[in-house]
Each structure stands twice: as C-alpha cells, then as structure tokens.
Image 1: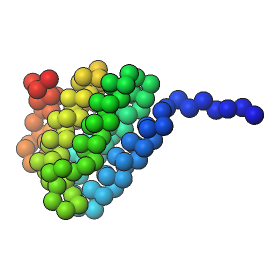
Image 2: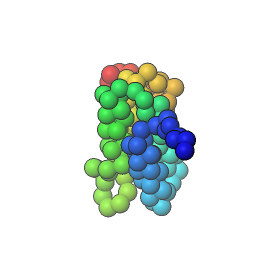
Image 3: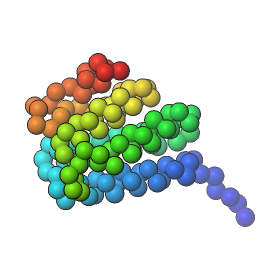
Length: 126
C-alpha cells in the first residue's frame, strides 16, 4: 500500500478552517469596505499559512499568532469585529507578511479612511 506524503503540516488545515469560519461569521454583519478588508486579510492569512507550512517553527508561530489575533476578536462587542479591530488585525497581518518576506501579500487601505497605504504603515512600524 502506497502512503501519500502530505506537503503541509497538520496545523495548516486547522488554521485555514479557523480563518474561513471567522470570515463566514463576519459576512453576516459586515458590509462594504469593512467586509472587503476582512476578506483581504483572510486571503493573506491563508496564503501565509500555506507558504510557511514547511518553514521554521518561529515563522509558523508568527503566522499562527496573526491568525489567532484575527479570529479571536479581542476588541469585539458581541459576535462581530469592530472596524478598529480589523485595522489592528490589518497592521499585525501586514507586519507578519513583511517579516516573512511576503510584501506582495500586504493588505492595502483601511475601512472608513479613504484608502491609506497599509504598506507604508507596516514599513513604518517594523
């Protein structure tokens, strides 16, 4: 019997499911720029999870922390993230993308602010 070798670690699927589940919940209450930002952050996080599946433990931990920050809704009231929480998650996710050498995954713009440059913000705070 041939054994299929997995190209990802077991935690990869779990992290992606957490992101997907959270975005599904956000779709019920967010609209417009806030929902678009949440979708972009989720896409970035999925790509970071996949691209660091075989990376060092430190890199995987950084991505795991970004996923948990996005999913746990620490600044939320009820079930949904506030705009402020999404902006905080955006800064953290962008910082992780820069530190992991993936500036192509940086999420631009902020809800309610006419599309400021997140790339500039992340570079400034690094």
